[in-house]
Length: 179
Image: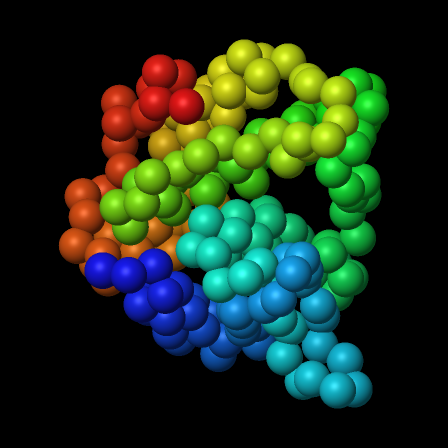
């Protein structure tokens, strides 16, 4: 199935699950992904993903799933972000905070039958410790699946598995060798 159709399915699924309870919509965006809280122009919170890319949508949803109620009232959840071109120290901080969202994105990707690509998101900057990052993401996936996912990611995984006719992701489905 073409990626555009998968994006449409994901948008319908996410909005059906989370718009009524969290007043949040997943929206196909333009250049840069961004989370925008409700304001005078829009009564709904919006997760805009880049260029209609399925992986961008899953990644941005992962950030939303981790953000608490107060952070969901701030643009981009109030998180620090330095664009591509980060120094080694900035890249290390980026990778540290990206472990949890990329772990969720990997679980979501598996739940809908899509390949996951880990992203250091710094092609123009100094490289981080890629193996450390990959190990961190892999361990976080295993921790999530052993301890149980939080409520919003758990609801989404169940819905993705049903929508995309995939098996429920299991701890043993995730290996460092897959990254």
